[in-house]
Each structure stands twice: as C-alpha cells, then as structure tokens.
Length: 288
Image 1 (cartoon, rainbow, N blue to C red):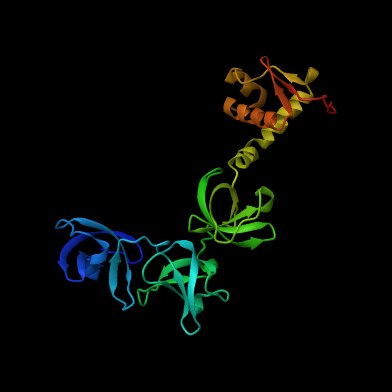
Image 2: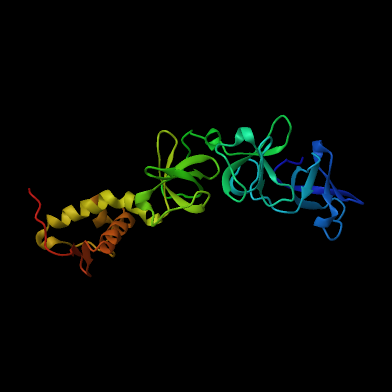
C-alpha cells in the first residue's frame, strides 16, 4: 500500500500516454508522469517514488526528493503568501507545500525561511505544513544514553541558548556556554546527548568531548585530591598500570582512569611520566 507523504517502493502496472501507473494498494493506481522515467520499468518491478497530491488533488508519484516527509521537521523557504489561504513553501517538489493560515505562528514574507513540520490532514489526506511546533514535540522522556549522537534542527533562541528539535520528535537545548558562536534558526546539526531531564527535555552539546568530561569530572577531582595528598604530589599509576591496581586505588576501570588522566593532562593539571603521574606545578597541600 502506498503511504502519502513518504517514499514508497511501488510495483509498476502499466504504461499510458500520461506516463506510468503504479500499484498504490488501497489507493488504486497512481500515476508517475512520464517525464520522471526515461523507459518503462519491468512488469511488476518496483519503482522508488514519493507520493503526494497534485494541484488537481489527485494522488501522483514523483522520483524527486522532498525536503521532508510526513512527521519530519525542516526549514523551508517561503515562495508566496495568500492572506486568505496561507503560505506556500518550496520543499523540492513541483507543487509547493501549503502552510495554512491557522498553522502559522508568526507573519511570513516571501524569501524568508520557516521551520515547519510536515503533516497529513486526516480529513482531506492533503499534505500541509505547520509552524506551531510545540504541539508536535513529544515530552515523554525518551530513552537516550549519554553521548548518543542525534540530529537536531535549531528552532529558536532562549535565555540559556538555542531550542532544537531532536530526531524529529523531542525538544532539546544547546547551551550558549557550550557553543563556539551563534547559531541560525533552521540550521541542521549533528549533536550529542548530555542528559535527558525528567520533563522530557534533552540537554545537548555539539562537542562530544564535553559529554565525556561531564562523565569523568568526578573522577578527575578524585585523582587530583589523591595527588595533592601524596608525597611530592605523585602517584605510581599510569597508562600501563595493571587494571587491578587502578581499581584498588580509585574503584574504577582502567579505561575510565585513562580518560580522566587524559582530561587532566590536556588541561595541564598533571604530568604523565613513565613511572606514574604528578601534579603540574606546586603541590597544594590539602587540610587533613
């Protein structure tokens, strides 16, 4: 069965003057205009197409690629505005995508870009866009792990940073303190999960090393405290120390220990030697 607003693999049925007819299942035969294929497919062969409604409200197929499918968010350019109907957006297909006035969050002008979600109107089965993004964001806490890579789209600014849509489903936040510079609304980025909050919102970062630091930060301070309480600010532990010795000293795996001393070394807080590690600089004696 063909799914409206998505890519489909549909069987070829027959040819006619307008083009090629594909089996749309419950939707019947769907026309793929001849300009999209040079030669007819093999009988029963599958054709990769996007299905939507044309200007006469007929289901048609195209081999062109839409910039977003049903359920996805995208930043699309405004082609024209009809005050009685809505905003028309360029989404990569011959027929522009309609953003009805009721789904418009703020006034729009031709040439500007809007972040929208593509939806299928359940009554008319027409594809529309909506700029009222909050209603489509799932606030059920998602099952993400720390450091997990995700795709995000920036949807607006906040006092703390930039709000973003995570994997077309959830709300996330990129903190100003983590960013090298300003971001643009509509910008698509690769990011990493720092944490999932109880309210379902996701703290994000663009720098994977920041996530790693958050994970090993307590251990780095534990190592520094141990160094500062040791004679000469030294410990006989290093990259090649047996895992048993590392676990006995700090109760962590050797991998976690190596990550922590790597962070401390990059921060120039320690020196790594062949026989161990030591504080970089004068030893700060901690009170007993």
